[in-house]
Image 1 (cartoon, rainbow, N blue to C red):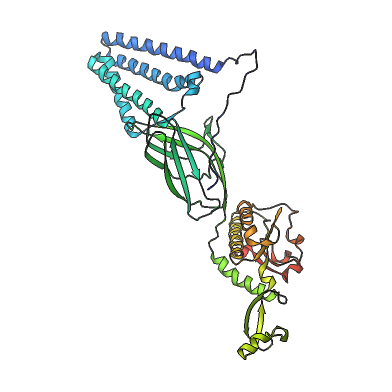
Image 2 (image 1 turned 120 degrees about the vertical axis):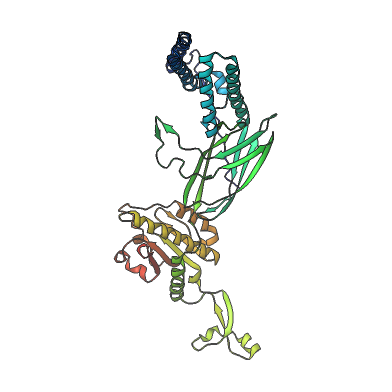
Length: 456
């Protein structure tokens, strides 16, 4: 297993000697606004008490509600912002909060109970309100402890193919010395928003982990492993930019979550499952290679009975004398084991139908390359800007598949790959191209088998 995640910690930038940090005017502005908001909320609360004693219960309820809303806005928008800019905020885990359905009902009960307590002055209502608020504080503190000290590691095989189930191992480690973690869910974070706008397309839209993974219990200073089966839909580069780990523990009122920074990229190879186009092309390719075989090689393949037309120099006299029947030696054809796979990535219009045929051509090229690898042929791969040497297919197969995984349509006018391919090459050419039939160099027709994308 390779491709382990590496977590990056950002170190503070050292300040120059003799100079202090610049004043944070935005934080001071927030602080002054918070003081004004809390002062106005206190004025409304005192006004609500005076109105209630004067018998104006409707106005008192409105003033109390406005005071509560003002205090809640300051608590949610300003206090966390200021806390993150303190030394203590740097030591604390930054959490994201999201109310559940139960939590929203709970919040409405707290608001209703707050209004009733302020308007009636009943001590029992204040005690109940304090208990409900204490439960919220306990929930936040416990969930923060649950999410601290957790690390994630994702292990994948060295080679991953599109649309093929791939085993993976996801490990959650609890580094805390004294506390366990409960009800933890790991997901891929949604794209961040910048000033109300989502990140540009392509950011985190090809993540490796697409389904949530749940752990009910992770003991202290231990690890829990989940065996996964990932099926990635298409070829290309996939990147896991981070994880979002959350919990509803202990009361299920809020979903508390934090982000774990991570950076992992893997290349997903094209699918190599034989397609209908592959089954149609392979017999034709084999026939062309057979007809292009020039002479015999030097490796003995088999000894068989003589047939009319067999050369006399291939007669095996020892086998003939032993069996009392005329036998001939059969040699392997060298050209059957030397294939030059050419993928012409140049496209014309590049519209959606042409791109779809281009993807079919990529998969067909991957299937052909894998076939030659399985039969032990010698293979060379050629495309725009990339070329392997003629080697055993096992030595170049994964370099070929990785190039096919990352290949993109080539629309440069000077990118005529076929014009630079020698007709008398060291092996038989198999060319996949989107170019029209009339544009193929004449010399390639006699030494190549050409697959046109528009026929796929």
